[in-house]
Length: 63
Image 1 (tube, rainbow, N blue to C red):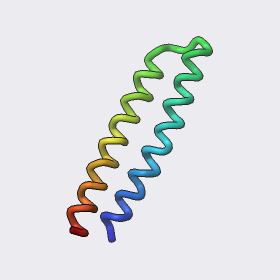
Image 2 (image 1 turned 90 degrees about the horizontal axis):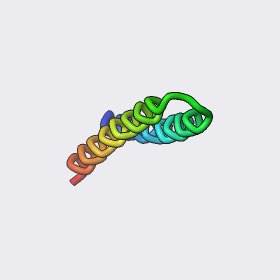
Image 3 (image 1 turned 90 degrees about the vertical axis):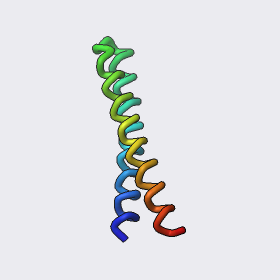
Image 4 (image 1 turned 30 degrees about the vertical axis):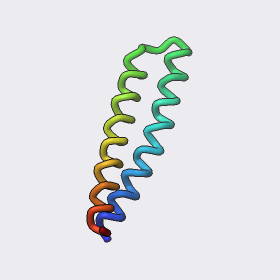
């Protein structure tokens, strides 16, 4: 049960990080530092990795 909750939390984190990346791209186009885009991309990659890890763990348990 906790693996399902962890995968669900990771999915929401990945979803939120997409909006964070889109916001950072918008800020960059408005003249902000390009480091915002780098930070948004890094957060998206980390949350995507966590989601993949949790889904793999969930599949391993159910098989």
